[in-house]
Structures are given as C-alpha cells and as structure tokens.
Length: 171
Image 1 (cartoon, helix red, strand yellow):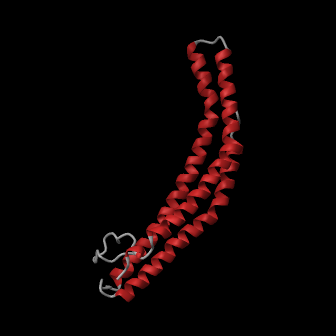
Image 2 (cartoon, rainbow, N blue to C red; image 1 turned 90 degrees about the vertical axis):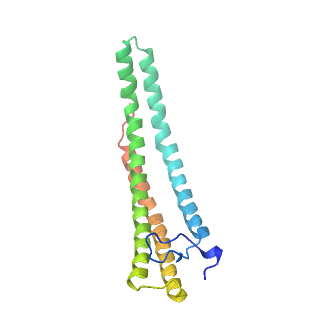
Image 3 (cartoon, helix red, strand yellow; image 1 turned 30 degrees about the horizontal axis):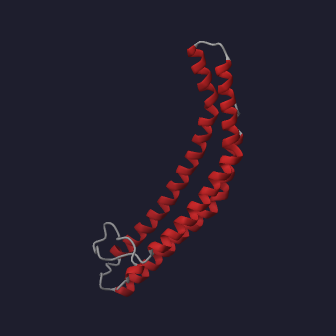
C-alpha cells in the first residue's frame, strides 16, 4: 500500500475511491515551482523591457493632459486616450498567460482521464497493488511530460508576447 509520502490526489469519479495516484506532492510542487519561477522571470523581463517604458510614456502623456487648459470632459478623454496602449499591453500578456495555463490544465486533465479510464476499463481492483502502481507510474510520467512540454513552449510564448508588445505604440 502507498506510503504517506507517495500518495497523491484521489482519482475523481473512480469506482474505487481509495486508489491514489503515486505522483507525490513534492514532485508536483517542484514542477509547479519550476514553472512558476520561469513565468516570473518572463514577467519580470517583460515588465522591465516593455511595460515600464510604456508606462512612463503613458504617465508623461497624462501629465501633458493636465497642462492643457481643456474642459474637464476633454481632459478625461485625453487621460483615457493616453492609457489605451498600457491597457492593450496588459491584455496581450494576460491573454497569452491564460492560454498557456489553459493548455497546461488540459494536458493534466488528459493524464487524469487516462488514469481513470485505465482503472475503469481494466476493472482494476483496489487490492491489485501491482496494477495500481503501473497506473500511478504512468500518470506521474504523463504529468511530468505535461510540465516538460509546457516549459519548452515558454520561449516561443515569450517571443510572441514581446513581438505583440513591440507593435503597441506609445501615446
């Protein structure tokens, strides 16, 4: 039977609820940490190279709005017009990150579904530890492959974000 250090999440919908996946929490946390650190580096790089210079341009533009003797309505429109590029840049980054997270989540769900199907299709009894261990090992390998494949996508995603941010003109 699995030891506490090798137990993972229960298989949702599994007819045998005591079957646990062997992928350890430490493994999952390590992979998540590695991915999170990579994404943080991406965001820091994006912020320093693109977002902050654009923010500076937006603030300078908005300061000019304050210097004009325009009506309050014209002043508000000027402020809003100046902020459009920054809003666009945030939308570019958020959209790419959301798509990336969605693809990673779909991959992990595919691994989960494959493990569930194997247990159900082969009608593996919760007492058949050897068969359960095989399913758990395959699930762990699948999850690891998801993280590894998505780590490979990060440079392409970074370039796409950077290319799209370069297209946004400062006010």
